[in-house]
Image 1: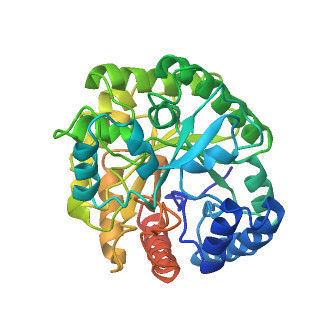
Image 2: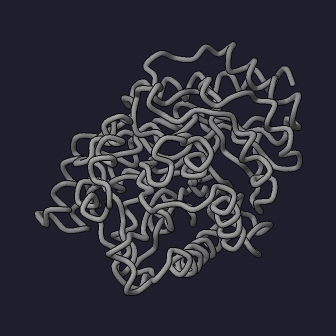
Length: 387
């Protein structure tokens, strides 16, 4: 995959149209089948793709428009996984009052979000992202990015005490099958020639930035109680490396996306803190690129990336949760700052996170999202000329 300096791409999700939202609801209610829904989604994906192409992106995605959200959609793709609303999952939380307080404090609508829970032995019943990539390939000649939930995110989300224990006594037992399933999907994506596979692991920041109610908290659907911070980070690092083993260097770039949550436009309720506590673990993760948010002050200083020497950086330069457009000059300056810490050949430009993380609760409008991408592409062109 030949790319220019400072390649531009998206993190994944795009705001769903009203037609797609109605289609998702109708499919869930059984009023339409998968084929009927895909007719609706196909058109929306092509519309999303054209906006990315018109903006000038170097690497495009399907906007995750067929997904209810970036993780719960796996309930349709895996055997013995049930999609439950966060409100339904409250039945399995010991301290319901405390948990509901967390949801309220963090601006989380319990009845609009959903989470996949393992209720038996899991296996793939269909591809997780391959079919979507094949459709996208038929409509573009640009490199494609596919996003998958990471193994730690899936383990923390899908192992629910009282639901999963009969098949998986511990979350570590579930993790073994999650690693296997993700490896199977990654092999298929590599063989299909998908140029970029991104694993989403936002819960890693929950491990280091959550203090109050630290034993059990909401972070993008991760409801499983966590152990000691260092123990969990070691566990996450091991899972990621098990998925990646033998997969790099086969023509597909593999990245790990780590943000601080993208469930609300209220920046003050989202997690904040520098990446520095995670960097020793990231440096040991066997990935080509780390996709990190740096368009928000909540992310700390850019100097923390210097430890990633030899790895690529997906530099977040536009905030998907704000209405205002970032200036071209500010993005150029951010790119130059990163280029003092890493080789320019190692730096990609992207939004901090997706523009439509949850189907029912997009972070922005398609119009604003498209304009932010255009500004980002213009900044990349200036950086290529100057550096």
